[in-house]
Length: 227
Length: 227
Image 1 (tube, each protein chain N blue to C red):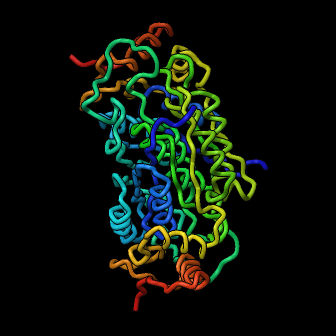
Image 2 (image 1 turned 90 degrees about the horizontal axis):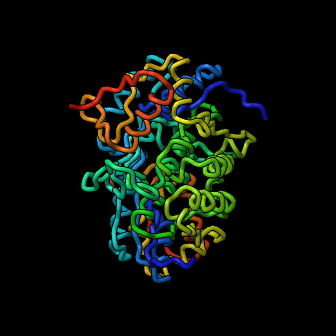
Image 3 (image 1 turned 60 degrees about the horizontal axis):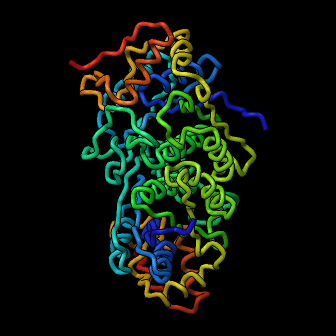
């Protein structure tokens, strides 16, 4: 069955990757419905970044959903008593939020079904990333299989597709691609512990990967750092 | 790998089915962590019912998570402008909430991972039910496959199991089973449009299936009806 809609739901955190994904979805002709999830993360700066990015890149709508994952904790991003590591760690780091991308995609799926859309976009990356299990291709394929079974649309013959245009790109390639598509990276916030003004710590895993990416891409790093 | 934990996360809506599932999980020796989701449904009566049921049946903890699905709408349960049908309809009814069980299971999965649990319980039923796609065995199996790929626990070798002890039972069998295990059905609320005191309408799909179940089970219906 051909997808009769050119609507797509794009998960938009306000970081560098998801901003680039939104720009890619727009460049492919999709009418984009950006979904930003407030899940009890450490700071609201990335949610504000998502608003700026959605507006600049011409998203048709921006939906913000709220889930109080801080009641569950279990991650440095949702439990303020767990420190964000400022040096590389081995294995899956404590910034992993249990089942976060499963949750985000389930929210995207529900909204997509209401909109009549079958295309979902998520900025997962399995190259320059923190080793999270729910960023891997096999996870994405399993979610697609689930989506077709989980929904009325799937029962009626729709086939959901989870687009992961960044999954095999190095950070530098993502940055070049986003820059070419007009993403203003100064508006994005990647830091795990940005301050209230969205300024980055420069020390966490996410900051390190981002800074190295600008360096490898040969582009000036527009990130606003603290202090 | 054998599950090293006897903890289980049990999705508990406050209705008849999930109360019975909680009683079953307890009877099987699990230490039960009940999860109740406030998702913008029409009434809070079922959330209060979940509290009563969790206490009576000896749940170790009750966690309430909130998601504002009413911002997305698309269902008679989350959009008050869509009426709850009071006569049987064909196909999947408008009370279907897009991707609801995918969302619920993803929340249960995240909490389970934080608790070190790999057993999830959900009261889906594919016999006397409303025809929702995310109540079918194939959906449940697909979620289990996803869970193992989505999580740190899965990467480390854990195997998640989604228990669906009611999936092939008729409503009357569920009621007999729950009654034998000490569920007080007068404390449960199944109605899609219960009033603030938890009294049932007696006319919606959920009320009809429930009333017919008590009748078929040969048990008095303890439901408090409106008017």
